[in-house]
Length: 213
Image: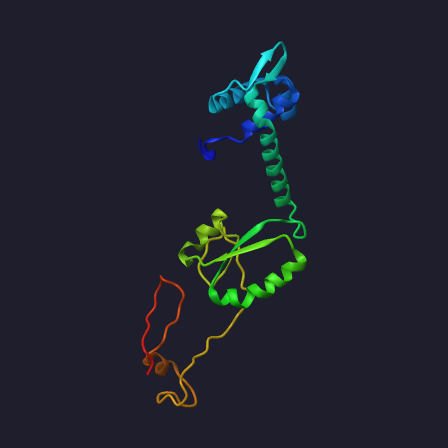
C-alpha cells in the first residue's frame, strides 16, 4: 500500500471513534454527520482489511489490530499537527526544519559561510542542504517545494515565484600581462575578436572553451 493511496483524514476519524467509543460522539467532535463517520470507517476497513471496531450496544469496541496501531496513529497525527502549526507560526529559534537551497557555485562561496554563522545564533536547530539545480528546472523545483530558496543569476520566472534582486556585481576581464591586442582600454569589438577560456561547473548549457592566445 502506497501512502499516496491513503486519505489521512480517515485516521483522524479512527482516532476520534477510539477516543469517544461511539460514532455519534466522534461525529460531534469532528463536526461530521453520523453517515459521514460511518462512510469513513467503511473506507478505512476496506483499506486496512480489518473490522477495526466491533459494536457492543452503543459502544464501539476496538479490535486487537486497532489497539496495536492506535498509539502510532496518534503520534503521527500529533507530529503532523505540530508541524503544520509551526509552519503557520514560524519560530527560527525553535525550528528543527531542514531548508534546501539551490545555489550556484559563486553564491555558495560568497553567501553560505556568513549565512551559517548567522544561523548559529538565530536558528541553532535549523539545518541547510545545498545543491545545484539546472536553471530550466528551478521554477518547477521551487513550485513543488523540493527547493525552498534559490540564489541564481537573473532568469524569467512566472508570478507564482516570488523573487528579488539580492546583489549587483560587475563583470571583469582577465588577460595575461602584455596581451598584444589589449592596450590601455578594451572595447567590445576587440574583446569579441579574442579567444576565450570558459570555466563552468555545469554539464549543460551554452558554452565554448578555447585556448587563450
